[in-house]
Every structure is written in C-alpha cells, then in structure tokens.
Image 1 (cartoon, rainbow, N blue to C red):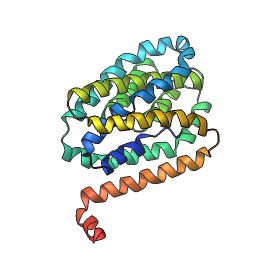
Image 2 (cartoon, rainbow, N blue to C red):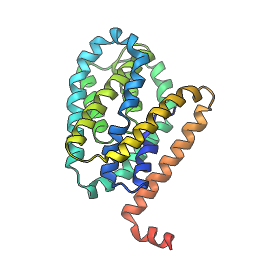
Image 3 (cartoon, rainbow, N blue to C red):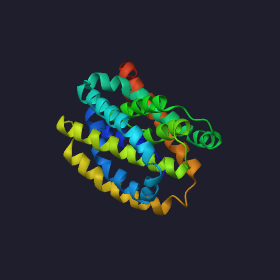
Image 4 (cartoon, rainbow, N blue to C red):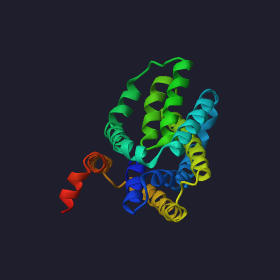
Length: 239
C-alpha cells in the first residue's frame, strides 16, 4: 500500500535474529512473488513502452547483477555500517513520494538516451544491493527520461523491479545467503499481504500510512546507527 515494504520486512528479519546481510538477501527472495503479481495489471501497457524496454533493459540487468555481486562480496561488518544510511535514504524517498509524483506530472523536459542509460544503471545498482525505495527512485528518473503516462511509467517500473528482483534473488541464492525458513514464512505472508492490500488500500488514509512508515524508518535508521556506532549507549539504555 505504501510502496516501501522493505522498510518493514528487512528490520523484521533482523529483529527475529538474522544477521543483517542474510536478512537483506532473504528479503529479496521473499518479496519476489509480490513483484510478479503486481506486474499482471499493467501487462496491457507494455506494447506502448517497448522502445524504453529495449533501451533500458541492458543497464538494468548489468546494474542489478553488479549490485548483487557487491552484496554477496560485502562482509557482515561493512553491511551493518551502511544499513542505517540505506534505511534513512529509503525513508526520505518515501517521505517525498507525493512531491516526486507531483513534480513528475508537471515536468515536460526529458534527458537524452545516454543519461537515461546511466541513471537506470545507477538505480539498478542500488536495487541489486539493497532495494528499499527502488520503485520511487525509478519513477523519479523516468520523469526525466521517459515520455508517457504515469501508468506507462509504472509498467516500466514494475517490469524493471521484477528483473532486478529475479537477478538479485538468483545471485544471493547462489551465494548461500538466504535463510530458507524465514524466506518461506515471509513468502506466505507476502502473498496474503498483497491480496489484502488491494482490498484495504482504498479504505485507508494513504498519507497517514506513509507517515507512519516514514517515522518507523527514521526510528530504525537511528537505532541501527546508535547500535553500530555507539554500542555503549545501547548497553546503558538496556540496563
């Protein structure tokens, strides 16, 4: 409903005792079915965005593969260091989502093909490494690089998010980073959540929901930062 499920699912996995690196890899695999189901309503728009698919598919694949390789090559210690900043970035992106959408509607200037390829590569690189807020990032870049309606841009976003998710899942599975029990449990929860989200989202206040998740993201970013950089403070608070 809010477009930032990883801000809840990733910390939840860490909270249940998984190391941060394993939690991130498991999150990729567990949320893959949701990517597939979200693609189905937008199939009708694909024929109108074929030129953009052809242009941006290669940088998407290369960026996602590179980001995933960086993830499996990252030590648990280093990943714990960058986690607070990744969560903070995702929370900020979600907070500014309405402004990004409004700006995208007003914007009528578009960058050239080299810039579009470069931006998509960088976005996919981030998506292959962490992924939270990836859809918001792509919509923001598409406002500069893709001519078309918001539904057409959403169709592109969902296709490329699915590609990134498939590549990332394959790489982390090959790297042995995924916890199968946690992934299976979250997969089932994701299927149920995706089904009920479609029924509930029309009844809920989107701004309040987004605000709650942004607040959660900021709190989690602060908590992980203190835990990593000021562990003595965490210990004193615990006592």
